[in-house]
Length: 196
Ligand code: GNR
Ligand code: NI
Image (cartoon, rainbow, N blue to C red; front, side, top):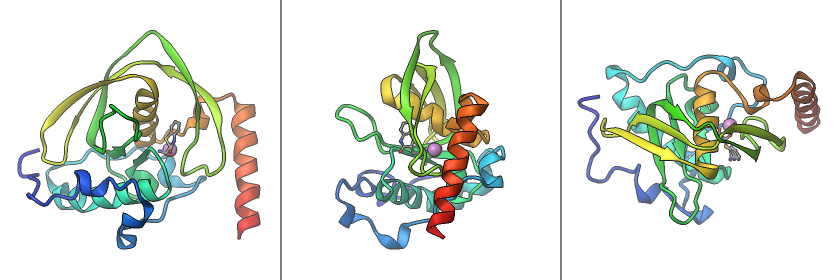
């Protein structure tokens, strides 16, 4: 994506990776969309040449919102933006992050599977075991428009697949049986109603 250059003071790098909650600028926080919602079921649109300003402005906001939650990933549809963009930071020693991935695509997945207890900021307080490929290779563009490729395993692999699912209108509960999914959606609805 030519023209999507980062300024020297670009906020997508370390200064938007605060371990301490008090370093998060409250002005950057976006409301997180809770399921059920049409935007969470829609397929997000590829980021294109006209979207540079949008994604540049959105990246620090998505990172701040993810860290504040706290979460290890966040997809644009979760903040009501229908573009193919995600942020990821599993905040584990030796793991890359913060990552801003634009138009991420799964290149290959392992035959080996892995099961993790997943949660989602759009399904607050709901958790279930989800089985996915243990290793995933993804291609994406970074904020400067540079093409990147990353092979991930462990929690990072799970998180990246969870985020790319969001761009395709898929939630972790869509990987469960209808029975388990309905149980979670009813529990969530009940809890949300109680909070109103
Ligand atoms: O914060 C999150 N934790 C998490 C745990 C296991 C598997 C996936 C995730 S992603 C989630 C944040 C989120 O909802 N991202 O879309
Ligand atoms: Ni999620």
